[in-house]
Image (spheres, rainbow, N blue to C red):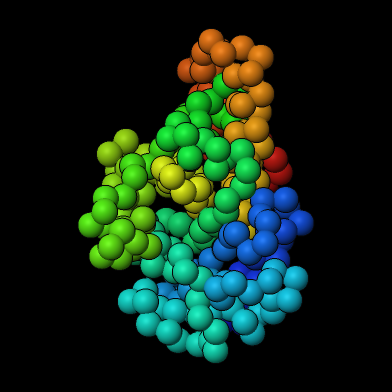
Length: 232
């Protein structure tokens, strides 16, 4: 992938945030990485999505050094950096404050899987990540946000592409994908699943999660070794 390709892909994914309905104002960012070069790009801080151009995308290396760009990178840059360093499988990260998923984050509740829509995208309950300690917030808030996310996924033995989403307590969701656009699509799916779950709990507060055999069938037919969803 050329640097120009990387900038174009990251810019396109960020520009798609607003039309997707996931963000208000500038409450979100997408990054993407070229694993061959170890370079990655992220949205600059506070820049309107509609005015964003590929030239605005800030390029960094995996040490966090600025490689190219005249604007300050997203305030969440250190979170993205830690996730890329710890999970070489992921190629894109999206962070938003989408309405319904953020409700679960603020409530400190994992997002249970109640149906097949959720199962198609997330292999079970989307986990809640612990709140940061006062020391972590004071020392390096964004870095330790990434540390807490990695810690939680490893505690649960979850692969970041099988469970490409987490809910940061008191904060908001982060999603992962094979590319920048893939991570954005996972954010769209997460928000829809959160909205469906809240509606489900309103109609039936005692609703149990989806049976395991249906969860397995729906997730694995799309993502498993014998997957047959879609076209070859």
